[in-house]
Amino acid sequence: MKTTKQILLAGILSILGAFSAFAQTKSNPVKVSHAEPIFQDLVRDLGARKGEKEFNLGADFSSGKNYRESGYLAEYEFAPINRLGLEVETDFSFFSQKNNSTKEQIPGNRLDGIRLSAQYTFFVSEKSQTSMALGYTQVIEFTDFKNYGKGKFITGLVYSPFFVAAKKWGSHIHTLVYTYPMIQHELGENQTPVDWQINTSVMYSLPNSGHFIGVEVNKEISHGKMSVTLRPQVKIKLDSHFAVGIVTGIPVSHDKENVSSFFRLVYEP
Image (cartoon, rainbow, N blue to C red; front, side, top):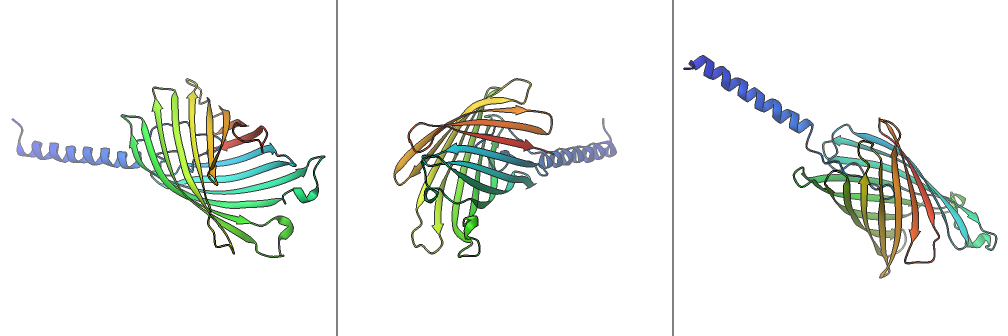
């Protein structure tokens, strides 16, 4: 039979063990590994853990009817606390003339905007391999480089609350839905038109590699009409810190764009 001292000691050890397990759970909450789309990427991994961070550089090349467009982005993602991701992104666009176009038909080169985003993963289920998050993106839009000093420097604001849901099927198949409105406020205008983005993706992660292949389906609803772009893609894990993503954009429901290409370099310290 145990003595009172032994029972007390066992109770103390049990409490310490439970506290240790609780502390470990709080510092390392459950996280389901989901394959993140390359083109419309997330603010941070779903179920992000405190201290995670990531740097991205991207380049997008497309061709319209009258001009060619080259877009570039730089972004920094980090998680200050468990399950909360924050992001700062800058986007630039540069345009070149086609042979049959005039200079008046070409948009001006510009810093498109600065994007400030926050994303909180409010649901993580290891049993169902499912994660869900809510977030918000604020975009600040700027005038063309050639107009600096000639008028309004900031031309508009875009407000975008968003919802993300992802599920992992078995060991290698990943599905994700990422949807949001774009509430556009052009400074000096009274109207605030609303467009919608509904982005879905299916990915297959290659076993024991960190690579994946898949496709994004980007759907935009603007002025009551939907345009759809397919984006087959591959992500290649170069080492424990670097990965590169390659995407081809194929418009399927509109003829204003041709096939485009997008590249993303990812660095995780």
